[in-house]
Length: 242
Image (cartoon, rainbow, N blue to C red; front, top):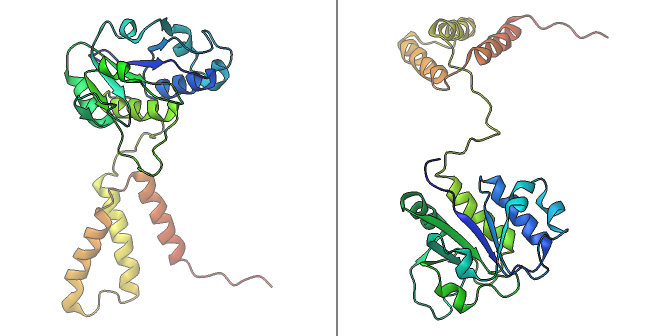
């Protein structure tokens, strides 16, 4: 990735478990740099490791700062995550909009998250370039720390060309001769059942059948499977054994 990854800054986080879950959310989407501002229970926190579920590298590299200003001192683009403006007039963006800006703007960027119970204070938000807020149900606007982190990390990852680990390698489309064999097999079976009658509709029906069978872009295994199905249908039904 050509641009620098954004930093995740947790301001006065309260529980080690939540720090660990935030680290897990970060690493899921390719982010590794966590900065902590005066964590309530100190650092390192023994509760963070188990909650991170393997995202140990994020926790091991986490840096601790006394103030938010120090934590973002090298960042040109700082986004304060909050559901309220808290009396500070700043641009308001969604996670998607912030991610687009981060990918094109020069300088380091940081997502800033407040403590679990109260969120960021007005003084914290005042340090940010913009307020990041999520369109959310106004009747239930409570997100936990890891959820908030994962929303931002996911939107950033969409522009970072991360490899999708669950997509299987697709087989190439079957060559035309295999597809022609499948179409011919269908036609032979259907002719025996008078499907192409009356003759005045035969050409149109054959064309429709060809269009139907060429649309899915079958690979060779799919063609072989379908040919096997047709061959099984061709065979006379065996009488059931008594």
